[in-house]
Image 1 (spheres, rainbow, N blue to C red):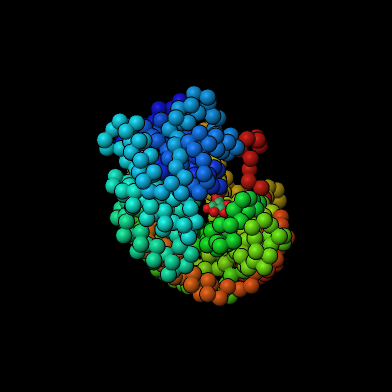
Image 2 (cartoon, rainbow, N blue to C red; image 1 turned 120 degrees about the vertical axis):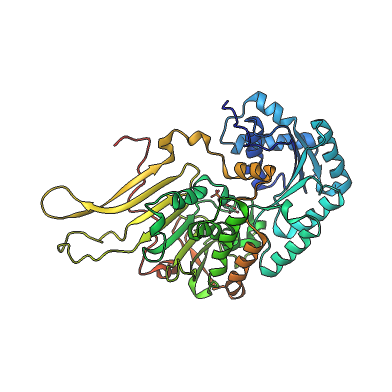
Length: 487
Ligand code: BG6
């Protein structure tokens, strides 16, 4: 196993209180992620206490965790690693209350045998349940030596986010609170900063003089799975846009921070959010896939959107007049996470008629936010032979080509590790989140009606009018080059 470089993991052993331990996120991401961090040696000692509404004991939780790893771990679960991990797991049902939780944490700390161990409370619960869990942690006296990770969405609108922040601060200090947005933990999201600010070729053209528009497009083929209860209250806008897509937009649009540290990065991101114009309902298309209303746990008259596309504007010196188009939805034709930047087109009159100049749209820089990222830069070039015929060509980079792809930490792993180390660089702030709810208010107060779309499609028809005269980049006219194939 590769040796973990010093300083990457936390200094102290950790007791993780995982609330929502049998839920979808814990099973898909958090338990597999914690398993990898523990078995790869990132954490110098760890105990995990599962907490949820389910009545079960520690043995039951171990079984449930094993099932989650078998189903969702992207890495092989070796028997010795599993035995070691299983020994770290304990369980307290929420109904047992604060005293039982306190006792379990103290037991875990004693077993680690180090007085300075730290506590990490991970709240993987819907916004409506977050506060009562925070109070239970307070009552149990588990605030000291602790950090708390709060899952998104943080609140459901401006008033609830402000109230959640206020009540959270009655129990935890701001430095203890880590509001997670896992898109910021994705390797390619951080690469946006590297790409933008480390390259003399691109840094000077990253503005309205050279960029025509930007698309952030995250269609998903996934449906709701077992999340109808959560999704019905949330919908695509709260689940994905006000959270992940706006955070990515901030990385795309922010000014260079003075350092890659929490305060300067938050300051620049928050300036972008402050410059965003309120989201106008006229610039939004909401959709719902046919059949959603007859799914288990969904209201037969549900108005929840499973798809949303919008146009937004950042009214500052760098971006005024450059529209940002955002789209995401469930049960769409393809699952992708794409940012594409369309450059302004040059004059074309010098090229002969029928040369093909501009025939395939503007030049694009495209980022794929998959864990093993890809990037592509498209441009016109001359087709070999007589005369001047132009073809659209592209330069492409795939992380797979580097041989470093095995080093990629999954987004949640990276962020859990950062929280254990107390590093807030990739976490969101109360101010930023409140501002995003504020710009969302006109939409939340007067949402346009949901329009049906066929499962497996690209969303309802008006989505094309929203972006006209441009077009959504997906589906691509050209495929990504497959790095595993030659040629
Ligand atoms: C989650 C949303 O935060 O992000 C899900 O709640 C969504 O609805 C998921 O499917 C997408 O994340 P990823 O990392 O799979 O792109």
